[in-house]
Image 1 (cartoon, rainbow, N blue to C red):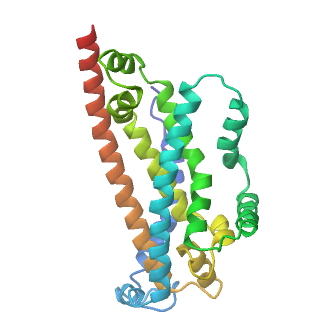
Image 2 (image 1 turned 90 degrees about the vertical axis):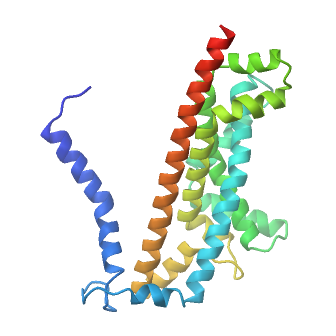
Image 3 (image 1 turned 120 degrees about the vertical axis):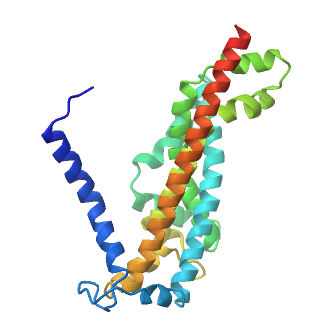
Length: 273
């Protein structure tokens, strides 16, 4: 382990300050009584009350949550399947093309991805709305899930699966009863990452959204052009709180699952030994 030094401590402090001080300022000014976001006029929660009466922001937030939950869930299923194929299937015809299609969104500019999806939806005659946003977010977030899950599958002890197969499980039952519980922390992490990416996306959603469905980042970006409103500070504070709770909850569940699975692995190894 590296020794403690003032240089390391200062670098770490400056890094965290650069990341979190703007968020702290935003949270503080969401309780500002003044309409001017840069002038403090006392503590007040009036902007949270007015936010609850702003139907445009509330509708956009509801659309964003629905899109994030749906797209992250679909991306987690598809990304887990893709990771399993990449790690367990070995070499097969078209593997290079398959892996390239999975990992392409990682390096593809979002503008190119959004424009290509827009042309696709127009070409097949699919009206832009919540469905197209879900499809777009699933496309670019699936690769992140695949990377996270595949990294766990690479270090997975396959003797546990083989033991389940020897005891009479089918390949699907071995995956469902043995493999999936063990890689569950990685699957949860992939879902959380896809959920966060969907909440944060602006570029791709701007290409694939329509009048019937507008996400919250697009709504905030449009409103900021006319000046930052205290309601936006309040809305951003609520989003930060939701993401913080989700991250803490997912980390807690993932840690408990990891500890339980390590204990089960040790017990299984002792039993087979």
